[in-house]
Image 1 (tube, rainbow, N blue to C red):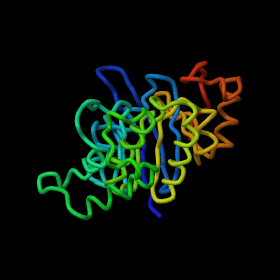
Image 2: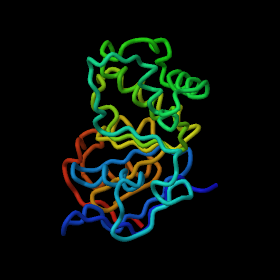
Image 3: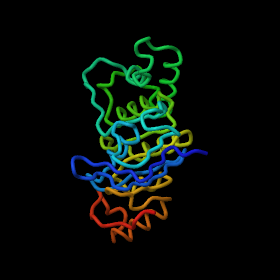
Length: 247
């Protein structure tokens, strides 16, 4: 089975500063991977390279067997999703926007079926006719994920999706994502290392380079040894320690 993402010897620099250097990373299909690391370590940049929004200065990237930007089977939730809270639009209409290929022709039955199915997956179907201005932060984030899912992706990229979600709902949110990975690869940027380790299959630590990547148990042990503190105390990539080189 082909991998969802292959990155080999990838470099990316901004002006004269390398944001990513010699990144080697493989993401398997149906893998739920957490991408962690300090602020400014290159996590969002890596997602944009996978999407084809940025081009590497050196190295090779393959996404779903194609060059970045060629595959349409990718869902993406950026760190901040812009919208006007007072704009008169329903939950279902927001999700239908994910079917943008049909936008100029109008939405058809398949678009509507896909949108409703996506809302069901994130447990928001009962609010399909609700105006978005009435939603909580957690509900709104689920709607944005449904919008990304409406394209029926094989790869779902999430950039800090729990940033605007109340702490008491985060566990339920991760459970929803864990179910999704049965049909797709899910890559989630997160700072909540101690929490996500209970749900993800693998963890990759990025700080300009990939320093460790593997199953949760192995990665957690390696991170704790490297940081020299319990995993729950590593918040937002601190304290900063150099981790074992990734082979």
